[in-house]
Image 1 (tube, rainbow, N blue to C red):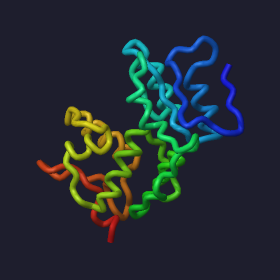
Image 2 (tube, rainbow, N blue to C red):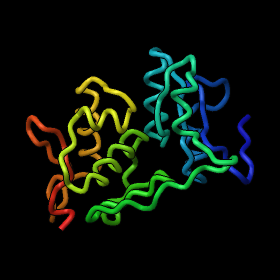
Image 3 (cartoon, one colour):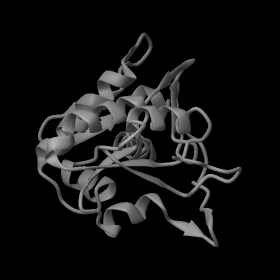
Length: 187
C-alpha cells in the first residue's frame, strides 16, 4: 500500500507492474496533490502500462533494473529538500514552472513529460536563438542522443503546445541548423 505523509518525497519511483493498484491510478492520485517527479520503472514488455502512466502524469520512464544515474537528476536535493528551480520561465503566452512541473499556454494547462518540460525550458532559455539537435540532446539528456530522439520530442511538444493565433507554431524548425521558439514571442 502506498502511503505518503505531509511531506512528499523528492522523487517517486514505481514499477510498471504492481500487485494491487496500477501505476496510472497511483500517478493520478499523487499528481492530484503534488507535482513531484514520478518515474515508472519498465522493461520493454511494460511499454503499454508505462504509456498509460505517462498519460496519467508520470514524468518519465526509466529502464529496469534501476540505474541510480537515471534517477538522480530527478531527485537532486539539498539537506532533504528539493532545490528550488530558478523561477517561472515565460516566453510570450507560455509559462513554465519547473519546480511544480507545470506548463501553461495562455489559460490552458499543458501536460508535459519531464523531458518535454526540460526541452521547453531549454528553448525558452535560448531566447529565440537556434539550438542544434546536439545542443538539445546534451542539455536535456546529458549526452548526445540519436537525432531522431530530439525530433520526436520536439514533434510531441509542438502538438501539446498547439498553434497560437498571434505567434503561429511556437517551435520552429530551422533547416540544417536546429530548433528555436518563434521570434515573435520575445518581442
